[in-house]
Image (cartoon, rainbow, N blue to C red; front, side, top):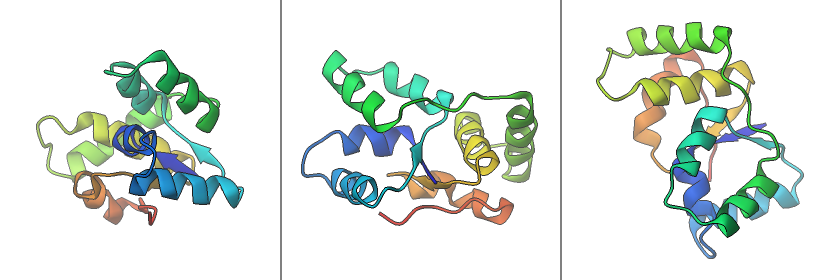
Length: 125
């Protein structure tokens, strides 16, 4: 299972991008793809058009909800990673991926590398 970060999916919707190539490879191989509802919400904040949202919804059928367990995990990640201002959404996205036992595909690996110590694996793209 691979969860997609917002940055990865946005770039993946651009034909010919590195992320587009990775998505095509994973889909062809039958790799299950998911995404947190948090990352999905970031995507919907745009700017993206209806066509892009439609395509994204075919790639990620049902975003994974942020639960109470996810809230506890995200808070733990936030505290363990130095309580960095502006990083809590990344903690939430990482927590959902960890809870789903999924690797995370991101175009911003530096934003998520600090969660490797907590078990987060980044997908190779």
